[in-house]
Length: 387
Image 1 (cartoon, rainbow, N blue to C red):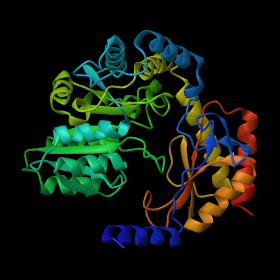
Image 2: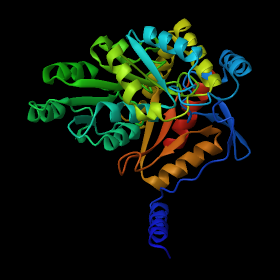
Image 3: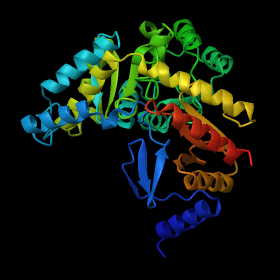
Image 4: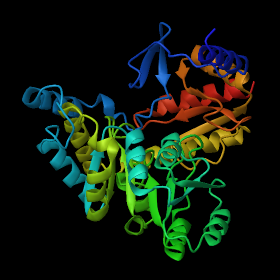
């Protein structure tokens, strides 16, 4: 057998024996509160559609209107013919919403992080990154050629020690998720801002899981009152905003630089007009309904309190993302199946997405849950996790 194929087969066998083999599930209506899977109707607590906006009639109508005017494709990269007035409206309103000079929209959150990191950092740059940052951040740093310096998760003393060690290095950048996607805990943005100022770094935050939820929908930085001290605010439309795409907002200088040097923007076709229109409708919905995120956070806090009373390990969460820490990979899959049999679908997260020995069920709460559904969810989780 070819050496590459032999290596692939061996690696797949190892993944399978470790209980980490992934397969694409057959799901219908995977974005909605109730999905169809294996011929069964299940309460969907695995989606990132935190506010239920992907089923919004306003978003759908905006997308249809855009198709009727612009068709189904942007036709080229944004710098050629792929731009249109919808992009302009979206970026102007987004910059205003985020209290920044300018904003720039990309094709996904993943490519947003690849673009900003490969543009801002090079082999002369030191990038200080939280050890639990999203894979897109890790990949962006790798592609940039920068020296990747990882600090222990949310350990500001460790980060300060590393920054002090490299105090005299000219080009330094700190990057972190604001809400961590697998634990639901929050970055210490107050301390990060102080360290940025002390050690003269750029500070970039990924608000993917905070956008639409914290700070009247503007993100955790706005909730904590430090937005003006952060150089670039990254976020997505594909989670709480119920559509697709990513963005950055910041000072005009940085946005202009990304337009001129960001390969992930320059060399890819722009988003379909229907998607841009849906993004704009979602942003306007968040601006009209700034309290939806707080209602979701209150719901999550109450659920975590009840689960903790029964000894269920929900990790360090401070958000609408609730990890149910199991530990063993096989047992995690078994409990996921028990919940499936009880009418609930949750994501089973195993290494390498999370550290070894911390396999968990990732519970993603959504704002459109009724009080009866929350009550039933709580009862079922306690019954399954506390036999």
